[in-house]
Amino acid sequence: MKETLSHRQLQSLIHVSNVLNSSLDIDTLIDSIMVQTVSVIEAAHGGVLFIYDPIQNLLIPKSDSNFKSEISDVRLKPGESMTGLAFTAQKCLIFHNRTEVEKATATLSKENMALMLKTIPTVPYSTICAPILLKGECIGVITLDSFDPSLHFIPEDINLLTAIAHQAAVALEKASLYREQEKTVRQLESLNNTISMQNEMLSRSVDIHKRLARLVLNGEGLDSIISYLHVSTGNTVLLLDDLGELISSALQATLSNVDLLTIKQMAQESIKNVGTARSFLEITINEERQYLTVLPIGAKPTLFGSLIIVTPEEIPEVEIAALEHACTVISLELVKEQAIFDAQERMNDEFIDVLFSGKMDSTILQKTKQMDFDPMGDYMAVIIRLDELDNIQKRNSIIRHLVQLANLLFLRNFLKGIAVRHHDQIVILLTFQQNVSTTYAHHQVKELVAKFQQEIHLKNWGSTVSIGIGRIHSSLLKVTKSLQEAAKCLQFVRSYGGNNQVISYKDLGVQRLLLQNSEEELIDFISEILGPLLEYDQSRKGELLPSLFAYLEHNQNAKEAAESIHVHTNTLMYRLKRIEDILSTDLSDSQQFLNIHLAVNLYPYMKDKLQEYNVISKT
Image (cartoon, rainbow, N blue to C red; front, side, top):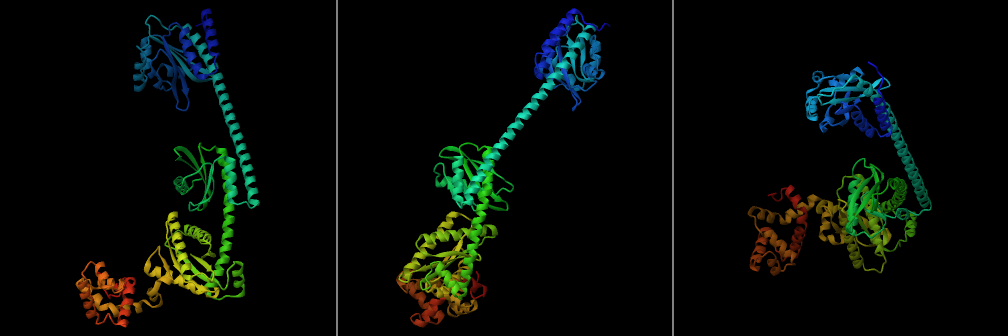
C-alpha cells in the first residue's frame, strides 16, 4: 500500500491543518478535529473523538459528529470495541464490513452496548479508527463510521486519517501547552494579587499599629484608641468586656438601646465558641442590613472582651488584618488597666483589713487624710456579697464590675467614700458630715442600695447580690463597729434570708437576738414560751397561732386583727382567751406579753430548726 496522499487528499489535509492551527483553545480544537475529519473523508457519516484518561485508564468521548447526546456517557477500556483495539494496536484500523464491525463491538460492556445502540441510527457498515500518537504514546482515537451500505472506507483513507491524526496530535499538544501557560499566568496573577494584598494588609496593619502604639505611649487610653479606629474605618466601633458590658464606643449613627443590647448578645454568643478567631454576623438596624465583625480581645481561656465593627457591607480582609493588630494593642491596654486596678485594690484591701481589726495607727490615719476622710466624721459601712456563682473567672469579673459600679453610683450622688474588694466581697465605706441627720443619711444610703440592686438586675450577669448595711458611727476609730454590723447582716441573710436580700442592722430590731444567741438557746426560748400552743395547733390543725400573729401584728387592735384573718371580733377574742389558757399566761401582763412578742418575732426564722429539733411536726 502506497503511503502517499493524492492531490485531493493533500488539499484536504492542508485545509484541515489550517483549521486546526487557527485556534489554541483546546475545546474548540477538539470540535474542529471532528468536523473537519468527517467533512474530508467521503465515506464518513459520523464519528467520535476519544481522549485517553490515564488516571481512570479509560477512553472518554470529547466530541462527536451526528451522534446523539448519550454518546458522552460511554467509557471504553483499552482493547474494548473498535476504538479500544486501535488504541491498543497504536495504528489505524479499518473494519471493512458489518460482520467485522459486529465482531469488534461484541467486546463492548453491557452498559456501553446499550448506549451505542441509543446514539446511532444503525450498526455501521464500515468503521475506521486512527490513534492520536504524541511522542510515542497514544493520547486518543478518532473513530469514523459509515452508515451507507454503498460506501466503505478504503486503504487510501488510512493515509489521510493517519495524517489528520498526526496534525491533531501536534495541535492538541500546542493547545495543551497554551492551556498550561495560561494556567501558570493565572496562578502568577493570583499570586501577585495575593502578595499585593498581603503587602497592603501589612502596610495598613503596621500603620494602625504605629498610630495606636503612639496613643498608648501618650497615655491616651481606650477611648482614644476606639475613636481612632472609628475615624480610620469610618464605621461604628464598639468595645465590650468579658461580661459583654460596653467599655467604649464611637458611633457612625445612633444606636437604640434595643439594637445595642442585641449586638452585645450576638457578640457574646459568638465568642463562646471554642477556637473562634473571628465572627461575621448580620443584623437589621433601622430596617437596613448591617454586618457585624466580632474580633476577640485576648485568647481563650483568658478573654478580655471583644471588638465589634458595624458596617453596611462586609468588611475587607485588609481591614480585618489591621483590626486584629488593633486588638493586640487593646489587649495590652486592658492588661495594664487591670494591673493598675489590682494594685489599687490591694492597697485599699489592706486599709479595710486594718479597719476591720480596729487597730489604727499613724500610717492609716495619714492614708485617710490622703483619701480626704475626716477622722472625726460620721461613718457607715456597706458590705456586698455576690450570691452563689461557681465560675471563678466570671466571679472575679463581676466583682470587679461591682466595685466600679459602686464607686460610680455612690460617689456620683455626692457621697464621700470608697468601694473596695475585700476577699470575695465588696466593702463600701461612706463618710458624712457631722451635721447631717443620721436618719436622713441612712435613708439616702438605702435608696442608693436599691438603685444598685436594680442596676445589677438589668446587667443580667446570672447572679444576685446580698447587701448588709451597718449603722452610722462617729469618728473613724469606731468604723470597725459599722463594718461588724454589716457583716452580721450578711450572716443573718445566709442563715435565715436566702439570697438577693438587703438587710440593715438598724432595721433588724429583735432579730438581732438571732445573731447574739446560739441556735439552741433560741429554740429553747421559743419552745418554752410557745411550745404548748405549737403542739395544740399541730394536733388539731387549729388557727390559734395565726390569730395570735395577727393580733400582735396589728398592735393588739382586735377589730383590725379580726378583719385581717376574716373572722368576727368575738371569734378572735375567744381564740385569744383560749391561747391564754393553753400557755397559762395573761396577755395583759407586760412581762409575759413581751416574752410572747419576742417568741412570735423569732418564730418565722427558726421554724425549720424547730422542726429539726422535733419541737413541731414537719407535716
